[in-house]
Length: 376
View 1 (tube, rainbow, N blue to C red):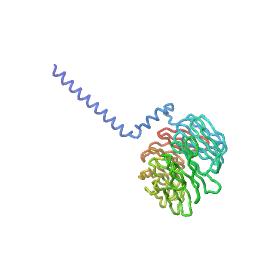
View 2: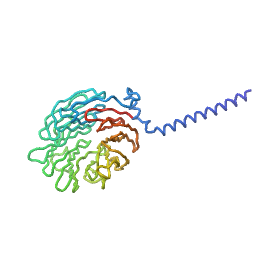
View 3: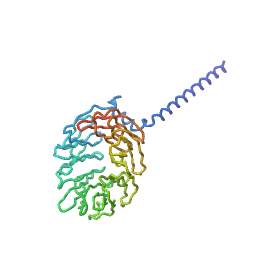
View 4: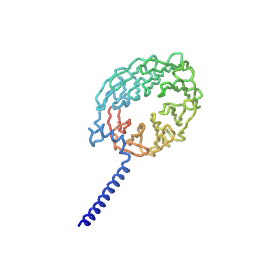
């Protein structure tokens, strides 16, 4: 009798082991199949947007002055610049605060917990947090370009009589701490590195596009290095997280060290640049073989220069980039990419023309007067 009981126990043990092994295999398969979903971003989204349930989108909310609206993410809030000033909306769409001032051509950008809004060609400029306006003034000359870095330092490029433009660096208390007067060429813009002391200034000279580097903690207006690209007009540039500078023209992108040497280049060859997005994670851009082509290549170019291309079809309206995600807004759909693969797709765009992606993978899509949050 005891032997029979022992044999039964052995058989049950074997069956139990097989069941456990089968469960482990199923779990492993599930982990492999859903490896893109089982991430800290996914857990963060599940917690932050749990009130949405399975809807995957929040109710849309509306903006005023919609013909002139420009948008930027400000944490979980949205900063909106328009002809009537700067407004900040919380994640529910309720207006958190506003600063009223006139702007004919409003421009907005954000970095970390701050939003910067200014009137291109005018003098109005303001900086805001999610809760209040921190600074608002009428600048001393027509603003050509203005930027804010991740540490809340400002760089303002503006016109001034007797010069080709003046670049002013302001600390987080909005006090001017450094100034450069441009004597030759034409000032396009300036940007400050995350170290708060490396200043890069973009100018256009008779010879081509030129970038000048300065140290803001040294007196004097002479650059310590420079880079000149003949017959090229750079229309934008920015520092990456690694400290190099990326500059973009219609011919390609070049990455430069602070010594003014080329780290790498990505030429566009005979392709046409249709859209681009910049971030300290590098750049994303859309290239097509013809100006009106409905198919092309969506490229993510990280700071290390190892580009990844995605072949896409359809009318592409806008793209957005952050550290882990690339999102493309097409005329009939919105696609979120991660690691070069499709991560989420939403059909229909309902007249939306702009898209911004958050670091957790959620997406905000905009028209000129409304926005909607999408959660993968």
